[in-house]
Image 1 (cartoon, rainbow, N blue to C red):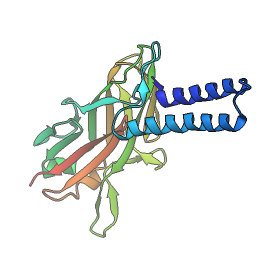
Image 2: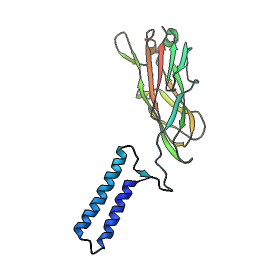
Image 3: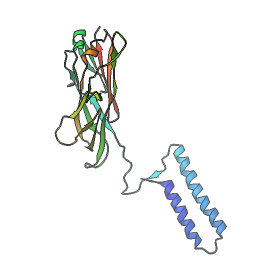
Image 4: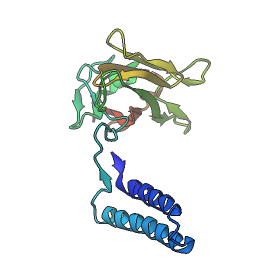
Length: 235
C-alpha cells in the first residue's frame, strides 16, 4: 500500500516542475501554485485520517504491511515439578500456571519444569523468519528469621546467573541459543510451532521457609508474552 498523501505531494511537485517550462507562468504564481497543491494534499489526507478513514490506496503488486512478533504462547499440562502437588491449574488464556503444594513437599522442592507451546502467527511467505526470544524477568524469594533474602532459584556459573535452562522439544528448526538468563532464535519461519521447555533448579533452603497459604512467583517472557508460574503452599 502506498500513502495517497505522498502521491499527491509527488504530483504537486511534478506539476510545479512542469510549469517551470511554461514561459507564460510568472515564477511568483508558480510558487503559489505548488504551495497550494502541497498544502491541499496534506490537509485533505490528514483530515481523512482524523475521522478514521485511512489515507492509503491499494497499489497492485505492493503488499500491505505485515505485523511483526505475533506469537501464540501457552502453558501445557506436561509442565511439572519434582514433587507431588495437591493441584496444578492452568488459567484461562494459558499464560499462568498455579501449583498448590503441601508443606513437606514444598520443603524439598528441587525442580520446576515448565512446557510452553509457541506458535508463530506472523503473516508472510513460508521462508520468512522472525526472531524469537525468551527472557527471565522475575525470581521470588523468602526471608530467613534474620530477614535475609533467599531467592527460590539456585545460582550457577560462579553465582553470576539463575540456574534456568531453555530448550526446544522438536528436532531441527527452529533452534534456540541460550545466553545467561535469556535465549534467542532467528529461524522461526511463518507458521512454525514448537514446545519450549523452561527448567528451573530450585533452592529448597528457600522454599522451606514459605508459610501456609503464601505464594511465590517465577516470571519470564516468551516472544514478548509474560508467563507466570505460581507456587503456593497449601493451608
